Amino acid sequence: MIYDLSPLISARLQVWPGDTPPSRHILLDMKQGQHITLSTLQTTVHLGAHADAPNHYGVHAPAIHEQNLELYLGPCQLIRVPIARGECLLPDMVKVKINTPRVLLATDSYPDPEHFNEDFAALTPQLVESLFDQGVQLIGIDAPSVDLFGSKELPVHQTFLKTGIAILEGLVMKDIPEGTYELIALPLKLEGFDASPVRAVLRTL
Ligand SMILES: [Zn+2]
Image (cartoon, rainbow, N blue to C red; front, side, top):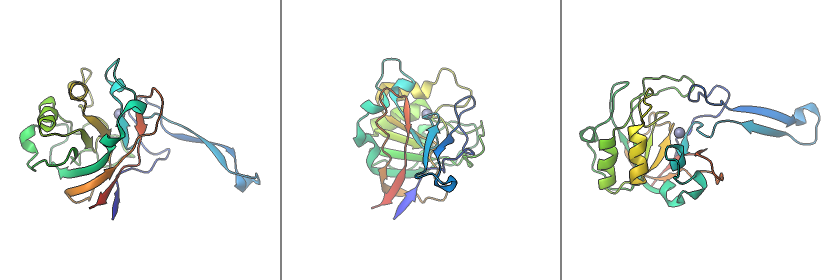
């Protein structure tokens, strides 16, 4: 069985304020009598469920095409972490024993991908360091950022840079049961880019 963690990509899908929303430009259309349908997508790469590349938050860090694909593929735990809007997750709030290299944290603090709420919950550098010490190489969340909305220093992103842990953001994890799955969330091979949309799924083992 497969759980789909990617929101629908449409003009209604919200992106970070000021970023480029997705739009489709139709060049040819069979409904208009043309021999094929052909369209162009314009969008931020931080679109819906996406993988951030380290060069998004580190000036000389790897781009998305340089990321090791093994990070995005393999055993993964989904953990529900009840937390109030606008709060930050500390290590002792994750009560489940970690036994896979990939962890998805469902905060339920960003419930509707078609409505951008700025008061989503975030991670802390302490939590990222604690998960790193437990062998974690990828962390995914159901919010648009691992830092709080108003953060400019981005201390959590900086901890990801330091530890080399990969980031997935914008996952939809409503109603998906806690447990251990196989994660499949491969980024596109976009040269030099700072992120890539992914089709993120969890497959039951
Ligand atoms: Zn991002």
